Image (cartoon, rainbow, N blue to C red):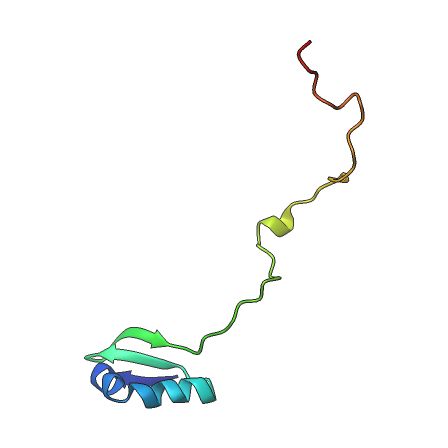
Length: 77
C-alpha cells in the first residue's frame, strides 16, 4: 500500500488511477499525515456467492411437490 497526500493525489490522479488499474496497487490518501481515504482496484462481485444467513437454512421437504387434496385450503361454501 502506498501513501500519498491529498495535493499529490489531486495533481497526479490520472497516473495514480493508471497504476491502480495496471498493477492493482492500493493507495492511502492522507491529510496532514492522517488517513482520509483508500483507493483500491475495483473487483467485480460474483453473482453466485451465497448469503451467509441464507446458506444456513435447511428445507426438509420438496418445496415444488404438489399439494394433496387434504392440504388445500377449504373454500367458503
